[in-house]
Amino acid sequence: MTTIVIADDHELVRESIVSLLREVSGFNIVGQCSNGRQAVKMVDHFRPDVAIVDIFMPELNGIDTARQIRKISPSTRIIVLSIYTDEACIRDMVNAGVCGYVVKSGAAQDLVEAIRTGSRGKVYFSEEIAATAEGIQNKKGKRKNNSSQTECPLTQREREVLQLIGEGHSSVEIASKLKIRETTVKTHRNNLMDKLKVRSVAGLTRQAIRLKLVYVE
Image: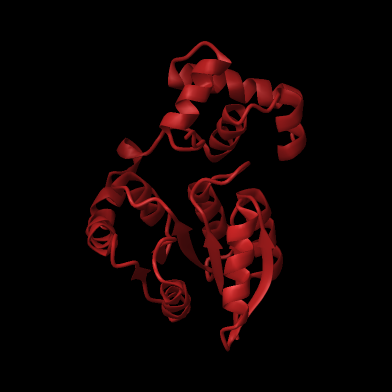
Protein backbone atom coordinates (compact mmCIF):
# COMPACT_ATOMS: atom_id res chain seq x y z
CA MET A 1 0.00 0.00 0.00
CA THR A 2 1.41 3.39 -1.04
CA THR A 3 0.66 6.07 1.56
CA ILE A 4 0.12 9.62 0.28
CA VAL A 5 -0.15 13.17 1.64
CA ILE A 6 -1.62 15.88 -0.62
CA ALA A 7 -1.06 19.64 -0.27
CA ASP A 8 -2.89 22.12 -2.51
CA ASP A 9 -4.45 25.41 -1.46
CA HIS A 10 -7.31 25.10 -3.97
CA GLU A 11 -9.93 23.02 -2.18
CA LEU A 12 -11.77 21.85 -5.30
CA VAL A 13 -8.52 20.76 -6.94
CA ARG A 14 -7.40 18.97 -3.79
CA GLU A 15 -10.71 17.18 -3.35
CA SER A 16 -10.64 16.12 -7.00
CA ILE A 17 -7.18 14.64 -6.54
CA VAL A 18 -8.27 12.82 -3.40
CA SER A 19 -11.34 11.40 -5.16
CA LEU A 20 -9.23 10.26 -8.10
CA LEU A 21 -6.55 8.56 -6.04
CA ARG A 22 -9.01 6.86 -3.67
CA GLU A 23 -10.27 4.90 -6.68
CA VAL A 24 -6.80 3.51 -7.41
CA SER A 25 -5.99 0.13 -5.91
CA GLY A 26 -2.96 0.22 -3.62
CA PHE A 27 -3.14 3.95 -2.82
CA ASN A 28 -3.96 5.20 0.69
CA ILE A 29 -4.52 8.94 1.29
CA VAL A 30 -3.36 9.47 4.87
CA GLY A 31 -3.61 13.26 4.91
CA GLN A 32 -4.57 16.35 2.93
CA CYS A 33 -4.01 20.04 3.63
CA SER A 34 -4.05 23.52 2.13
CA ASN A 35 -0.56 24.90 2.78
CA GLY A 36 3.06 23.88 2.91
CA ARG A 37 3.48 24.25 6.66
CA GLN A 38 0.65 21.79 7.29
CA ALA A 39 2.16 19.45 4.70
CA VAL A 40 5.48 19.34 6.54
CA LYS A 41 3.68 18.55 9.83
CA MET A 42 1.65 15.77 8.18
CA VAL A 43 4.73 14.23 6.61
CA ASP A 44 6.53 14.35 9.94
CA HIS A 45 3.56 12.58 11.56
CA PHE A 46 2.64 10.00 8.92
CA ARG A 47 6.00 9.50 7.13
CA PRO A 48 4.14 8.75 3.87
CA ASP A 49 5.67 7.09 0.83
CA VAL A 50 4.67 10.04 -1.37
CA ALA A 51 3.90 13.73 -0.84
CA ILE A 52 2.10 15.65 -3.59
CA VAL A 53 2.63 19.41 -3.43
CA ASP A 54 1.76 22.52 -5.41
CA ILE A 55 4.37 25.21 -6.03
CA PHE A 56 2.64 28.37 -4.82
CA MET A 57 1.01 27.70 -1.46
CA PRO A 58 0.34 30.04 1.48
CA GLU A 59 2.60 30.15 4.55
CA LEU A 60 5.23 27.88 3.00
CA ASN A 61 5.77 27.55 -0.74
CA GLY A 62 6.36 24.27 -2.55
CA ILE A 63 10.11 24.78 -2.90
CA ASP A 64 10.72 25.17 0.83
CA THR A 65 8.09 22.54 1.61
CA ALA A 66 10.02 20.03 -0.50
CA ARG A 67 13.30 20.96 1.16
CA GLN A 68 11.88 20.52 4.65
CA ILE A 69 10.20 17.23 3.78
CA ARG A 70 13.48 15.86 2.47
CA LYS A 71 15.14 16.76 5.77
CA ILE A 72 12.56 15.23 8.09
CA SER A 73 11.56 12.23 5.95
CA PRO A 74 14.21 11.42 3.30
CA SER A 75 12.32 8.31 2.21
CA THR A 76 9.21 10.30 1.24
CA ARG A 77 9.09 10.84 -2.51
CA ILE A 78 7.89 14.31 -3.51
CA ILE A 79 5.79 14.98 -6.61
CA VAL A 80 4.87 18.43 -7.87
CA LEU A 81 1.38 18.94 -9.29
CA SER A 82 1.21 22.40 -10.86
CA ILE A 83 -0.18 24.51 -13.69
CA TYR A 84 3.25 26.12 -14.22
CA THR A 85 5.51 24.89 -17.01
CA ASP A 86 8.16 27.64 -17.09
CA GLU A 87 11.77 26.60 -16.72
CA ALA A 88 12.36 28.63 -13.54
CA CYS A 89 9.64 26.78 -11.61
CA ILE A 90 10.76 23.40 -12.91
CA ARG A 91 14.40 24.15 -12.04
CA ASP A 92 13.58 25.28 -8.50
CA MET A 93 11.53 22.16 -7.77
CA VAL A 94 14.00 19.73 -9.34
CA ASN A 95 16.81 21.34 -7.36
CA ALA A 96 14.68 21.02 -4.21
CA GLY A 97 14.76 17.26 -4.69
CA VAL A 98 11.40 16.28 -6.17
CA CYS A 99 11.12 12.97 -8.03
CA GLY A 100 8.25 14.00 -10.27
CA TYR A 101 6.57 16.98 -11.89
CA VAL A 102 3.03 16.61 -13.23
CA VAL A 103 1.23 19.36 -15.12
CA LYS A 104 -2.37 19.86 -13.95
CA SER A 105 -3.64 20.23 -17.49
CA GLY A 106 -2.44 16.72 -18.33
CA ALA A 107 -4.28 13.44 -18.05
CA ALA A 108 -5.23 12.12 -14.62
CA GLN A 109 -3.27 8.97 -15.44
CA ASP A 110 -0.10 11.09 -15.41
CA LEU A 111 -0.42 11.62 -11.66
CA VAL A 112 -1.16 7.96 -11.02
CA GLU A 113 1.88 6.95 -13.05
CA ALA A 114 4.05 9.54 -11.31
CA ILE A 115 3.11 8.11 -7.90
CA ARG A 116 3.78 4.56 -8.98
CA THR A 117 7.07 5.53 -10.60
CA GLY A 118 8.16 7.66 -7.66
CA SER A 119 7.35 4.97 -5.11
CA ARG A 120 9.74 2.68 -7.02
CA GLY A 121 12.53 5.20 -6.57
CA LYS A 122 12.45 6.55 -10.12
CA VAL A 123 11.54 9.94 -11.60
CA TYR A 124 8.54 10.93 -13.67
CA PHE A 125 7.88 14.13 -15.63
CA SER A 126 4.84 15.06 -17.69
CA GLU A 127 5.54 14.93 -21.41
CA GLU A 128 5.14 18.71 -21.77
CA ILE A 129 8.06 19.49 -19.47
CA ALA A 130 10.08 16.25 -19.64
CA ALA A 131 12.89 17.57 -21.84
CA THR A 132 13.32 20.69 -19.71
CA ALA A 133 13.25 18.76 -16.43
CA GLU A 134 15.67 16.09 -17.60
CA GLY A 135 18.10 18.73 -18.85
CA ILE A 136 17.97 20.49 -15.49
CA GLN A 137 18.45 17.21 -13.66
CA ASN A 138 21.50 16.34 -15.73
CA LYS A 139 23.12 19.64 -14.77
CA LYS A 140 22.15 19.40 -11.11
CA GLY A 141 25.30 17.60 -10.00
CA LYS A 142 27.58 20.20 -11.58
CA ARG A 143 25.71 23.07 -9.96
CA LYS A 144 25.82 21.33 -6.59
CA ASN A 145 29.59 21.65 -6.53
CA ASN A 146 29.20 25.42 -6.75
CA SER A 147 26.05 25.74 -4.63
CA SER A 148 27.59 28.15 -2.14
CA GLN A 149 28.05 30.65 -4.96
CA THR A 150 24.70 30.21 -6.72
CA GLU A 151 22.09 29.75 -4.01
CA CYS A 152 20.10 32.57 -2.51
CA PRO A 153 21.98 33.83 0.61
CA LEU A 154 18.85 33.63 2.77
CA THR A 155 18.51 31.03 5.49
CA GLN A 156 15.49 28.74 5.59
CA ARG A 157 13.95 30.75 8.43
CA GLU A 158 14.54 34.02 6.59
CA ARG A 159 12.78 32.61 3.53
CA GLU A 160 9.81 31.65 5.71
CA VAL A 161 9.65 35.11 7.28
CA LEU A 162 10.00 36.79 3.90
CA GLN A 163 7.14 34.75 2.42
CA LEU A 164 4.87 35.65 5.34
CA ILE A 165 5.81 39.33 5.02
CA GLY A 166 5.04 39.11 1.31
CA GLU A 167 1.64 37.65 2.13
CA GLY A 168 0.88 40.68 4.30
CA HIS A 169 1.22 39.20 7.78
CA SER A 170 2.24 41.42 10.70
CA SER A 171 5.20 40.68 12.95
CA VAL A 172 2.80 39.46 15.65
CA GLU A 173 1.10 37.08 13.21
CA ILE A 174 4.42 35.80 11.88
CA ALA A 175 5.69 35.17 15.41
CA SER A 176 2.54 33.17 16.16
CA LYS A 177 2.74 31.09 13.00
CA LEU A 178 6.44 30.30 13.40
CA LYS A 179 6.25 30.00 17.19
CA ILE A 180 9.04 32.49 17.74
CA ARG A 181 9.23 35.84 19.58
CA GLU A 182 8.13 39.03 17.90
CA THR A 183 11.57 40.51 18.55
CA THR A 184 13.08 37.57 16.65
CA VAL A 185 10.79 38.30 13.70
CA LYS A 186 11.95 41.92 13.70
CA THR A 187 15.58 40.76 13.77
CA HIS A 188 14.94 38.53 10.75
CA ARG A 189 13.18 41.41 9.00
CA ASN A 190 16.16 43.72 9.57
CA ASN A 191 18.57 41.04 8.35
CA LEU A 192 16.42 40.54 5.25
CA MET A 193 16.51 44.24 4.50
CA ASP A 194 20.30 44.24 4.79
CA LYS A 195 20.77 41.15 2.63
CA LEU A 196 18.26 42.17 -0.03
CA LYS A 197 19.24 45.84 0.07
CA VAL A 198 15.77 47.23 0.65
CA ARG A 199 14.50 49.60 3.32
CA SER A 200 10.76 48.95 3.56
CA VAL A 201 8.15 46.22 3.87
CA ALA A 202 7.06 47.06 0.33
CA GLY A 203 10.60 46.37 -0.83
CA LEU A 204 10.61 43.04 1.00
CA THR A 205 7.30 42.14 -0.63
CA ARG A 206 8.75 42.82 -4.08
CA GLN A 207 11.70 40.60 -3.22
CA ALA A 208 9.37 37.82 -2.03
CA ILE A 209 7.65 37.95 -5.42
CA ARG A 210 10.98 38.01 -7.27
CA LEU A 211 12.18 34.93 -5.39
CA LYS A 212 8.88 33.18 -6.19
CA LEU A 213 7.95 32.85 -2.52
CA VAL A 214 4.71 34.68 -3.23
CA TYR A 215 2.66 34.53 -6.40
CA VAL A 216 0.78 37.55 -7.73
CA GLU A 217 -1.50 37.26 -10.76
